[in-house]
Amino acid sequence: MRQHIRFYVGDTLHHLSDLPPEMTLLDWLREQQSRTGTKEGCNEGDCGACTVLVGRLEQDRLVWRAVNACIHMVWMLDGAQLLTVEDLRTASGTLHPVQQAMVDEHGSQCGFCTPGFVMSMVALSTRADLAELEGTLDGERVINEALAGNLCRCTGYAPIVRAMKKAAAHCARNGEPISARQEELTARLRALQDGKTVELRSPKGRITLPASVDALATAYAQDPAAVLVAGGTDVGLWVTKRLRQLPHIIAVRSAQDLHNIHTRPDGALWIGAAVTYTEAMPHLLAHLPAAEQTLRRIGSTQVRNAATVCGNIGNASPIGDGPPIFMAAGAQLHLRCAGVRRVVPLEAFFLDYGKQDIQPGEFIEGVLVPPLAQGSVCAVYKVSKRFDQDISAVLGAFVLVMATDGTIQQARLAYGGMAGIPCRAKKAEAAMLGQPRTQATLRAAQAAIQEDFTPLSDMRASAWYRSTVAANLLARLFEPAPASSTEGMTTGAPTLQNWQELADG
Image (tube, rainbow, N blue to C red; front, top):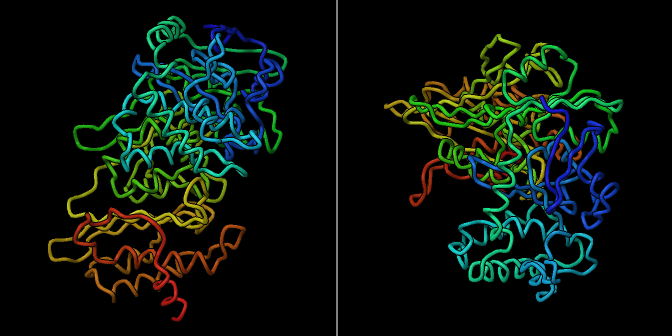
């Protein structure tokens, strides 16, 4: 067992042992390292001004991820390489191609958000397939996704996007400076990987970084009052907004065997508790292609780089985007307490607002998503005020299994934002069973769904709006697929015509 964490910042190796559990990376950089280029904006992982670059070994390959330093705890850096905006310029004063492009394209005005933009852009510039994306529609999408987690109030995104394209073209032709050090930095990080559990104890609190799931199970069984932290995108706000102190944190992502994600011989997808949305994305897109557009809109790149799939389930938010998708797919949650394991259907895990079917010392080991049945019609629709990085007003995830005679054999209609927990619309499902996929069946299901939910009004949507949209998402589901597309492969809001039709009765 090791009693300190160790990581690189630039070319300096740090060893830390006396560390408050809730110390954020942003505060440590600014207050203890005088690296004030990393800015504090929203302090909740939304604006991106605090973006930094974290390099880790993933399957023995160095991968760079942009993360929000404001909700990233310092202890999460054990075994990692950190770069801030101060590390980009060379000793001779040469700017990184991204920085130079921002100067050339006038990508900065007040400059407060600029370091965060630059770090997100540098993360993108390290992609091995950057040259292949140049000038393509997919390249435009990738750039937009990379910048969706960074907000600028004065410059406007056009010059920043132009700067990214210019920097990408330069790096594709001449190489990217950080990637040029790949072998050196990979060897540096390999030397830090000792496979040991880390235990930090000080008057300020206790931090446990288990090296394995067995070590995690033991530590949590011994102290069920400890706080489990995976990506910290939710718990980080407990610290920055609620000013909570966390006397004992047990890390989830340090357990290497929880990073496992694979498709089983029966076609089911296993996602370990330490797998982030970014790591899971290619597997999820192959397994649930109809959810693609919604999955790409969960948080931002920085959030998806840190947030875990199982953490999104475990925090039991009624407006989390992941749970309804997995619920509609019939996912099962695998729980463990010490050496005892049990499996529960995902929908049975959520009991009431703030209450889950989980015992003291019990934690999520992973989630199993079965393959869709033959003849399934699947669709996922997210409705929010903004397209990128916004919390859903309503999210609907639907799977219909069609019989050979054209009737609906099985219906799973899962919603987020409609109740205190993500849950299925059981009465609407019952109205569909054994019925053909017709307008009469749709109207019966729309009437039934009004009895399934009594939503609340809040700052995101009124109860009337939520009820209206929930019913209209079923209309979207029942629309015939365009001849040029695949059934159920679309996502978005219902049409204005459908809204008006329901409003008119």
